[in-house]
Amino acid sequence: MSPPSDADIDGEWTYDVDGVIRRRNRHDLDAEAFSRAVERIEGGLDWGVGALCERDGAVLLVRQDGQWVLPGGGVEAGETRREALVREVAEETGLDADVGALRVVTEQSFHHGDDAASFRFAIYEATVAGDLTDDPGLEDEAIADVAWFETLPDDTLDRGLIRFLLGR
Image (cartoon, rainbow, N blue to C red):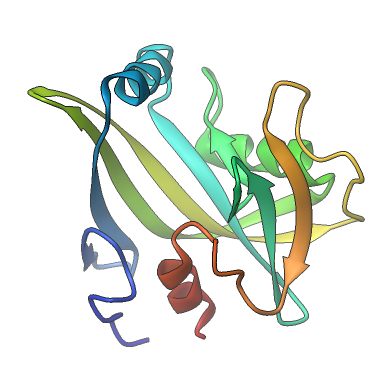
């Protein structure tokens, strides 16, 4: 697989020896958004995880906070990243996941003035079984829908990266 062009992947990125994309994203936030990010990070968010699931040429996405994203979420205390991914996929989609290869690790850094906070986000390949739920996400989550897409919607988070990972 050839490296993506700079236009495909946001942030600074490299490949490691195992072919995993390593990238850094910086987000300059207003005071309120920065405060929310710091609260989540200080509350234990060291890692987040996302599942890249393909079936019959389609990719699985969930609609959260007004955009389409890979299913996933935060790793809870005592969980491995793989365990968290299985739990998150089930909660958000109703599907049982089998976690495969690690594809991407992103360091997300948030800044407001001289203040900064960061966490890491890993994307794994995953295969899923079962039927999509009619009631995605947990009650306190802002997940509005879950669906399979042959073509990525324009409002997909990290659309260029996902297209590259899918080979499209």
